[in-house]
Length: 369
Image (cartoon, rainbow, N blue to C red; front, side):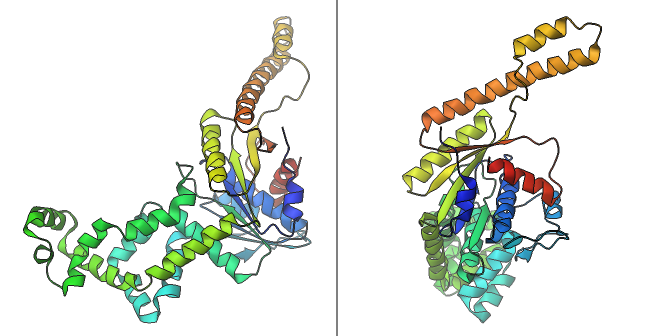
């Protein structure tokens, strides 16, 4: 089993983007922040893009809150060799910024005020994943940082982040939306005059379900959006190329649990099929055994200490820990047998939540082994 050399990855000047991916609830956000902190302290100009972090993470970075634009982390006593910047993805504001870039002033203003746009900019499936990629492209284009660390959205599907540009483009260019927005391209006629008689019942049903005003809003939106669709797709293509470049590395984060490791396997297989560079798997929140006493020995000793309840409880707790550690080892061994080429790093579970830079620094030390 190969071990990930985290410090070599962070120190490599050719390393420009590190993407932390995995299922939800496995500690991706905290891992990304800990990596960014360690990279900054080792001399990199680093920015970490987080997705919906807990408030305590912003506090751990010494910031009252994280916004859609990077803020430099400045805390008393924190004097890294490089710089540490942090931001949280604001999906709606990122979409708005993209519209302003690609649509031009007048069309952008019309789009941003359109009720249909205001709905889809936050509710389309895949929007958050796409906007994470859009923001990554924006950060890379500035050239202000030599290392960008990305915390991907907590998608249920392992494929959502990589598929986001294609899925969102297809949704916005799909036949259903074109049918619903047909009136604008037919000189403003009503929907029932645009579609043929065979669709009259469908048109009536659509108008009943979503309302005539929303149809009008959708038509106006698609007219304005058509002008920027090429730029939209081109940006997605460039970001996809960035993710496949030699300067990008993926770290798959997983807890030592069956579902999380199953999701991690999907990521590993997909990254391999897409020829995307995988740095390895981070097994987060593991429970290593802290003493050489076996579980059976601990239980046997506990049986002899009936008159020492505290010592008995400690021994039984140790036996439970040994059992848990053995279960986790079996699960990780199964993963490594299926993916022997994937390097591994383990991070022990902490006693409590991370609430300051020292906690993030401790995770970074554990990541580096």
